[in-house]
Image 1 (spheres, helix red, strand yellow):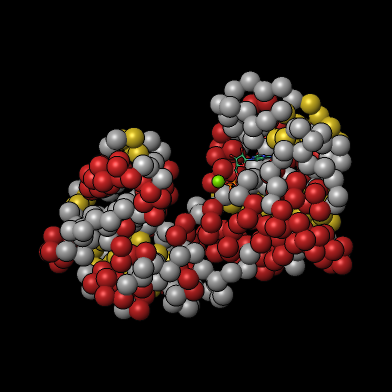
Image 2 (cartoon, rainbow, N blue to C red; image 1 turned 90 degrees about the horizontal axis):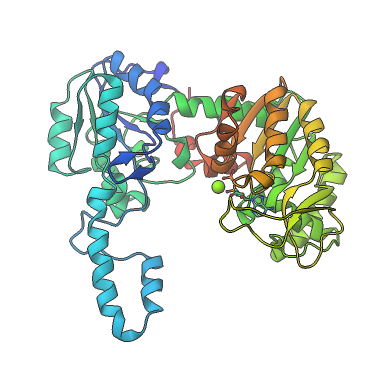
Length: 435
Ligand code: ADP
Ligand code: MG
C-alpha cells in the first residue's frame, strides 16, 4: 500500500463543500460525553478546513446502532441468539421489548450532543442534520456557506454504511465536492463513508491520518534501529497474526501479557489456567523458528506473576506468587510478567531507537498486576527512541500512568494500527488520492 497520499494541504478547499469523515465515536453516559479526546483530536483538521474557506460537512458513526431509519428495525445476531435461548413462551415478549429498546438508539446514539460540544470548542454555530442522506441533511448541506460547519446524523443508523452500499455512498458524496478522511480508527474497514464515497469525489487525508501514515509508515519501511516491538494484551487471535510481518522488520520482538502463554506452551511448558490459544501452538513454534532463522531476538517472560484466578472485580485484592515461567502451577493463572522479565524487557526497550507497543504486559487494571505494564511504559518514556503506541488498552494504560505526552505517537485506531503493522492494505487509506 502506497503511503504517499494527498493531504488537505495539497488541495484547494476554498469555497468548496467538503465532506469529512471523522471519528466522533465518543463514550457517552446518557447525553453526557465522558471522554472528548476524539473530538479534540479532530479539531486541527476541522479548523484548517474552515479557516481556508471550506463549507464543512462532518460525518461519523457512534456505537453499534440498529438500522433506525428503516421502518422494519431488525434485531442483531447477538440479540436474536439471546432470545432464542429463552423458553419459547417468553420469546415473543422478549422480542417486542428488544425492538422497543432498539428504537431508542435514535436518541441514545445521536451525534447531536457531539455537535453541541463541537460548537462550544469552535466558538461558532454547528448545524445538526436530523438525518444522514435524507431531505434535512441535503437541504442544510446545500445552504451551507464557506466557514460554516454541519454534522450529519450517525452514519450507522443506515445499514448501508457498513455494507458499503454504492447508492448510499453516492448520495453521501453528492452533498460535497471533496472528501477528507480523518478517521484512522475505521480506515481498516471499507464502508460507504470511508471507501465508497471516494468513487465519486477527489479524496485526501486529514492531519490525524497523515500523522499515522508518516510515523507508523516510517517505522515499518525505514525504522531507526534497533527496532523493538512489544506485544501483549488479551486479544490473542487478532494479534498473533501480526508477528509474522513484524519478524520481517524488527531486531527484537518482546511478547508479554496474555499472548505469551501460547508461546510458553509451544516451548513445552505448563501454563496452568493462563490464557491460551490451542489452535495457535504450531504457529507459535513456526514463529520461534522464523525468529531464529532471521536473527531476530524473541523475548518471552522468564518469570510470571500468578494467582488462583482472574481477579473479580478486576481491580479487587489478589494474592500473587512469582514463579519462573517454566514452573507455572497447573492450578494457577499467569496475570503479569515477573520482576526479572520487567528488567529484561525494559533493557531492550531502553536501547532501542524505534519502539512499537501494542497490548499491556499484564492485567494493568489491577494495581497489583500493573507493574509489568508500568515497567515497559516507563522504559519507553525514558528512552530517546521514536515511541509508538497502538491499541486502546495500551493507550489507556499509558495515559493512566501519566506518560502519554512522553510518547512520540499514540495511534487513534487500535484495530487499524494492528492491521497496518500486519502489512495489510487499509481500504480507507488505499483509496485516497496519490500525491
Ligand atoms: P489493546 O487494547 O491495547 O490492543 P488488548 O485489548 O488485546 O490490548 O488487551 C488488553 C487486556 O489484556 C487488558 O484488559 C488486560 O487486563 C488483559 N491482559 C493482559 N495480560 C493478561 C493476562 N496475562 N491474562 C489475562 N488478561 C491479560
Ligand atoms: Mg483492547
